[in-house]
Image (cartoon, rainbow, N blue to C red):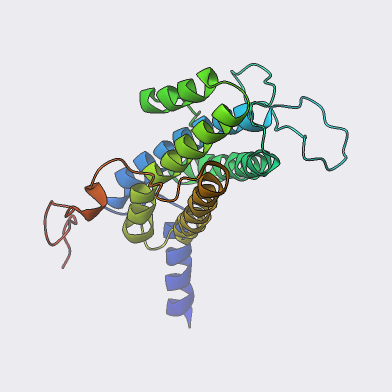
Length: 225
């Protein structure tokens, strides 16, 4: 009985600490990547739905999002209520996921990570900043944000299969993000067909999904018994 309790305590301690072996550096890079990716999504969704410094408390299809640090207040550029609704939901969800990932980085690795815009994400934001409000923006948002989601799928697949097996909170969060973002891409593809007659939109621009992954056919690890 004592041995069982000791083993459980040891397991719990490990679960609250860094990943073992190769998983540690992977988890840090993964979580920082997702935080930055989500941070850029906040700006994209702000451009779609607009920002509200203070809301009335009433539910409304014209309600904006909370403004993100470092960005100016923004009027909604989307004309579609469906797109504005999509943007608000994405903004709220990804804002909370940033907080969750920052908490895990702090608790497991002692890292107080602050989001930053990476060049490729700034380029995507630039497309939406320069798009004309209305239908032109609606189409740009659906295409750019679908691609933005797609860019994270490989990282999420790696998360669900490559983080420390004792870090269930991280694996579960990645699983939730994967399902939410694949569903969101499907919704945006539907809106592209419904509003713009685009029936074959794909969030990638080459045949890369059909290409083999490459690398070691047995994966990798740092050793064992």
